[in-house]
Amino acid sequence: MPKTLLISGSPRKGNSDFVLAEIFDRIDGEKEFLFLRDKEIKHCAGCLSCHEKPECAINDDMTEIGNKMIDSDVMIIATPNYFDNVSGLLKDFVDRTHPFYAAESLKGKKLILIMVGGGKIKGSQEALTNAMRGFVKYLKLHLVGTYCFEALHQNDLKQNPEAISKINEIFEKTVNKNKK
Ligand SMILES: Cc1cc2nc3c(=O)[nH]c(=O)nc-3n(C[C@H](O)[C@H](O)[C@H](O)COP(=O)(O)O)c2cc1C
Image (cartoon, rainbow, N blue to C red; front, side, top):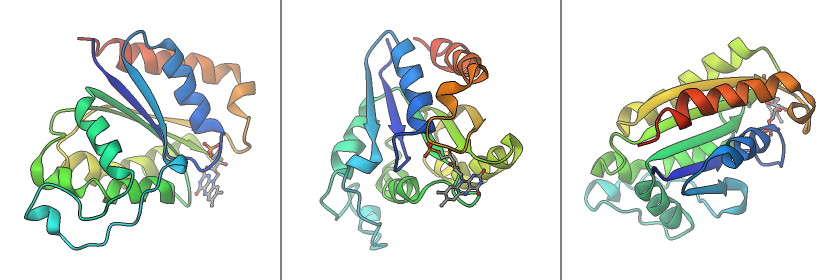
């Protein structure tokens, strides 16, 4: 059975968390749910020492998160749309994965990306694809799906029955299908 790591990049307990929690509940296997807002993740310092040694010079929660990523088979990352981009929390996380670029330690891992935005789905779809293109490309990840939801207020998706059918679709098409 694959190990699934779910990562929320929202600073609030809102729609991104809701989508991930629903997927988490459906997974019958090893799984872990991380909230970036609860972690200490400093900005990348740009020192490039990870090009010399496959580790980061900064000592914070990114070490533990990185080990969990290496240990996982499937990663599901959800973020709010902030100014047609990912959240700052997620961008800091992405920048800090640079040691995995140099060492290719996440190569081939499956990735599912989710974005929730207050505007139209199309806008979020473009924003997510553009913002996460480098993460997928440079870490050599296997992107199995990108999904977007429209919701503005904290509990909007909880009250939207269409969201549940889309969550079922994400689970069936990506997580369940990718069971080893
Ligand atoms: C700083 C900020 C910027 C935002 N920018 C956008 C945007 O460019 N496009 C959009 O569709 N929604 C935007 N939103 C709305 C959020 O994406 C929306 O509230 C979403 O539900 C947040 O997800 P969450 O509940 O998982 O935190 C923005 C919200 C904030 C707070």
